[in-house]
Image 1 (spheres, one colour):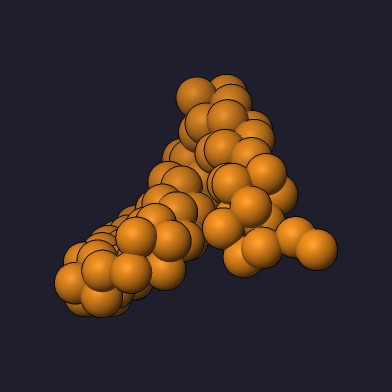
Image 2 (cartoon, rainbow, N blue to C red):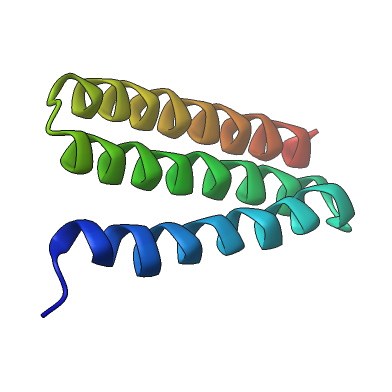
Length: 91
């Protein structure tokens, strides 16, 4: 029987690590600025997932607060960039 800790260590964290590497490729290669912003938002989202897994794994709830604050900052940054792109389109 597989334990939750082993599942985190051997399934979830490797998948998140591979996805971060693939998203970083998109972040550096991205043909448009919008693609890079979406990739940056996805990197932050994956980071939130890693923080959450670590919080569950180490049984420290304070990291969930950090993940929530990071998610709020990422959301506000994405909304601000979308507003900036929309304003540029109007000019």
